[in-house]
Structure formats: C-alpha cells, structure tokens
Image 1 (cartoon, helix red, strand yellow):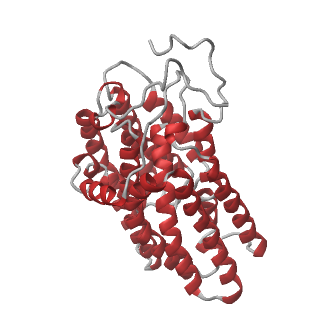
Image 2 (cartoon, one colour; image 1 turned 135 degrees about the vertical axis):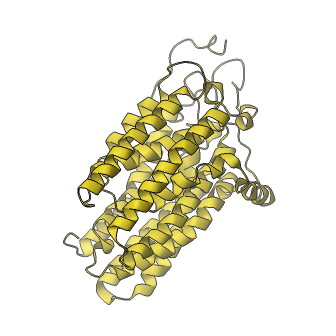
Amino acid sequence: MKNQFLKSPPPKFRYNSPFVQISLIGLVCFCCPGMYNALSGMGGGGQVDHTAANNANTALFTTFALFGILGGGIYNILGPHLTLFTGCSTYILYAGSFLYYNHHKHQAFAIVAGTLLGIGAGLLWAGQGAIMTSEAASVNDGTYIGFMAFMAAGTLLSLAILPPSKVVRDDGTRCSNIKYSNVSTEVVEILKLFLNWKLLLIVPAAWTRGLNNVFYWGAQMFGSVGIGYIMDFQFSKVGGREGLLGIGVVALFGTAIWSGGLANQLKYSRVLGLLDAMFQSMVYWVIGALADDSEILSRYAGFYKGVQSAGAAVAWQIDTHNLSFMSQLIVNWGLTTISYPLLVILVLLAVKDDNKAEEGTSKEAGPTGPGPVYTY
C-alpha cells in the first residue's frame, strides 16, 4: 500500500538515496582506511625497520579496541558528520607521522599518531557500520604526501554523508527516524553489549579478523561483491535462510583456503584477501540482520570493531616478537572454524522473517506524510 502514491520510479542517483549514500561512505573508506591499508601493505609503513610501524599499530589497535566499542554511542550522540570527519582526520596525521619518521627516525610521533588513529578509526568504523547495515616498495616524501592527500579528500568527503533519517528509499520510506542520544543512555547501552548473547557469538569471528592483519587487498573487492549477492539472495521468505547459505559458502572457502595456506608452507596468497572480504561481508550481513534501527546497529558495529581491534593489537606485537607463521596460521584457522557454528546458531535464533530482529522493528520509520519523500 505504501507505493500507491508513487507515480514514477525515483531517480537512482538522488543525493538522499541509499545507493548514493553508501557509495559516498565507500569512497570515504577508500580514501582513508584504504590508503592506510596501502601504507601498511608496503611493510612497516614503507620503512626498512618495521619496529616503529609495529609499535604504532599496537598503540592504534589498543585504543581502537576501546573506541570501537564506544564509537557506536558517540555516533548516536554526535551524528554522522562530526563523527566521520573527526575519525577521518586522524588518518592524515598517521601518514604524516611516517613522513616525519622518514627524516628524523623518532618513534614517539608515530606512536602518538597511532594512538589517535585508534580513536579516529573507532569513530569512523562505527559510523560506517551503522550506515552500511541500515542501508616494501621504494618510499620517498611524495609517497606519504600522496597518502595524506587521499586521506584529506576522504575527510572532506565524509561531510557529504547524510544522517540515516534523511536517506529515503525508493518506495518513499525513510531508512531510520533516529533521534540522537545522550551520554548516560549510551554508557548504559554499551555496557549491556557485553552481556548480549548475540554479540558474544560474534566474538570469535572478530578475533579471527583481528589476528589476520597481513592480507593482500586486491581480491577483497571480488569476495565482498560475490558474498553480498549470496547473503541477500531471497531463496524463501523464511528469515535467515540466505544467511545460512552464506555462512556455508564462506566456511567451505575458508577451510579450502586455510588448507592451501598450510600446504604451501604459509606463503601469502591473494586468495586470502578473497576470504577476508567474504568473511567480513558475511559478519556485517549478520549484524545488519539483528536490527533495523541505526542507533542499535551503530553499537553492534562498534562492539564488533572494538573486539576485532583487540585481536589486531596482539597481532602487531606477535609480528614484532617473530612468532612462527605456523602458530599464527593455527590460531587463525581455529578461530575461523569455531566462528562458523556460532554464527549459524545466531542466524537461527536471532534473525527473524525478512531479516528483522525484535529490537529494531518498532523504530523503523514509515512515510512522513500522504506520499513518498524525495529530496533532490
């Protein structure tokens, strides 16, 4: 009935359409976390001595673990513009710290910048999660300046992201009618996350990602797109059926890829990037299916990134202390395997018909008037 006033299909490229807003957050992530990944992919931030980068990243993921959990609450208080802009700006400082280190070889700036980036990344990924689920090479100064330029562009681009309440679906309904929260409410709600059985089932999946930092990134685009189609494919109207298929596909790929890694004596391969992207898309689908309200989803996404970052903080020190690759592979493979049945239990018990969970259904906004809402 809600389409009865719709005279013609709305343009897909409306500024306040989910497609455009998700594309914008994708560009923001390309410019900031994407450039961070590229910088990390050079090995030690492009330095011959990796110690500074490992220590900076340990500091980064330690604060990320805290602010990943707090990030959802901060997003609910500040909204997307200030949260994303503040988070993105710390990526520029981090890249700049390695430009400084390139000349002066002092770790202090890099470690402080890493600490601040952990705070910023917690804010950025909590905001990204809420929006998405509700909708060693040759190095010189130019390398770091180039990274900083992309990150600056991403920081400015974050100001174009609309709050979920202003994003309008093609049928005229708003994605959410969230009213921004307050500090006391968010403190209580964040503490409750540690007793939420749904999120506790996701913890092994989060640790798997956190302890698997050294991946090639190119295959991730293909993996995330492919698993996205599987997770959203409607085989029936029984809630969660597509989620179970997606978990099964990722479990099959994961077991094969980890077996291949073992057979090849732990030589890194681009196929690990494929698994990483599929695994992350799968987990985000599950999180998105737990609620329809961006206020709840921002906390869930923040909790996931916080726990994930705690594992990543450990990972960088594992690299610093030269733990054997075999030990790292066994831990990652074990956590990945444990996570699959836990995610299946979560989908069976918590994902309702049409992917709507109990908490979020009462907060979904309908049309704000006699007809659809469009803003061009």
